[in-house]
Length: 160
Ligand code: ZN
Image (cartoon, rainbow, N blue to C red):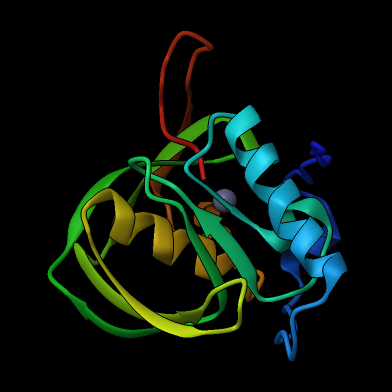
């Protein structure tokens, strides 16, 4: 178990496009374990590999106790719209209003490189969109409506 350093807005690596994963390796397995440790430690609901400095198409998400490891993820279908508060572990202490689809269907590969599909609504749909954006160097601050606002330490805002 290891906690990795989370890169913050302004770090160039967050703006780069990530590469596809061709095969699972012990190094990548370790990376994925560390990504979960780092996300849970930071009380986030999602984390993308570039946030820990690795330009690979890997994200981990856990919004409600069900963890999803998404390798080479791709959105297949979106429906409806939600507008709500969003934060990011790479933008600590801030949040902003972002419009996202309220329903998302995506495909991804798990740690065994088996393809699966996930359907999410509400926060899960938001987290999938947010994390997948990271893989193409897109940050929620690019999409925010209005200004970012401060969230206090006592606030239990979900951060991705
Ligand atoms: Zn984020």
